[in-house]
Length: 420
Ligand SMILES: *Cc1c(COP(=O)(O)O)cnc(C)c1O
Image (cartoon, rainbow, N blue to C red; front, side, top):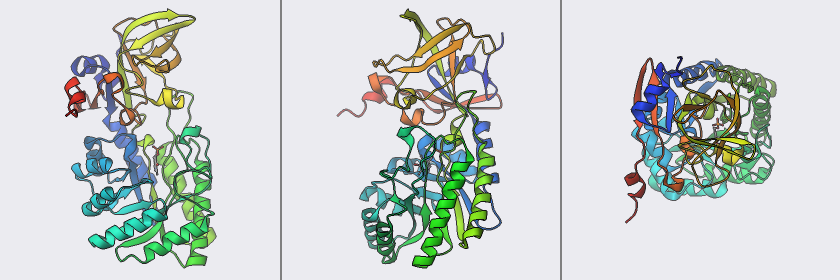
């Protein structure tokens, strides 16, 4: 009988050793994504930097691994920054994002020597300048611009609508100039460039090329009107991955080289230079490398549905309930058997919406079978909760026939340890 393997380790062995539900990453797949991004994202004309958007899955073991590949980190909170500090990450390659950083978070980041703040609005610019000048700590700033481009993606994860909470709209020149003025008065914060991020799970390269055209046009305007030239430009992340067999995303390495080519072309065309181009892949770095192992428990027919109940649910993967996200799965011990029955895979959380896969054809399933849900490596663990006091799963990295525990399973004690 054939048994599905991850990183050369059989799923049955992983489940027996570490329990279920279990998040398993194929370490070599993460390294491959990292290497192809770094290789694809390089230019003779300007510096380049690949930065991992750590919200997709933050773990110290992962940060160490990506650091070894020369990748920087995008963090959105003191908590994410703390993980990168613990991992010994290169602080000059850390980009501190977020639309409402607290004073404490700013101080923490300045003390740590964070390379960049991605500034969202004029109030933030003003607070950052005050705090950095008082502490006499230097940092660079990128101003987040909303380029007004909406990519083809689910509404909940679209960030470039005109009324988005993120950044300053590209047409709002007054607000942009206020930020530039505020920062020009600071001795310690230097505005080194601009940032934009157009959305998530975008599978076609044209959206990013369009965003580059728009942002480089904007830089040409900044050069003409404000005398700013040779700035840095971050084009954000949002590269789509293959959740279903029908998804056809552009490979990350190809996406990266197409973006560099577009940036080279548009800077030439528009007569403006950039000193550095930055990209921030999150999902595409870890999404397909990860999967979740569940044990099938009870099963029942309800109306016209054949339910399979698994030992996790929306508490370890909220995306189906939150975004109607779709996934596929296989039975680990019957990976190639023909699908005979249509099942609905539901979790054990107390919500009718706690359905992981609405409809899937699988070979006849039995209690005790292992169900492997694919491509759960991004925004699964990082959005997991303790709803219904289910403990968060353990996380394992597997490579070359070996598996190592990187995050242990959350116990009942862990869950109640904050009570005083
Ligand atoms: C979420 C986010 C990313 C990463 O998005 P992915 O879809 O995970 O690649 C990058 N940059 C910013 C500013 C983000 O908010």
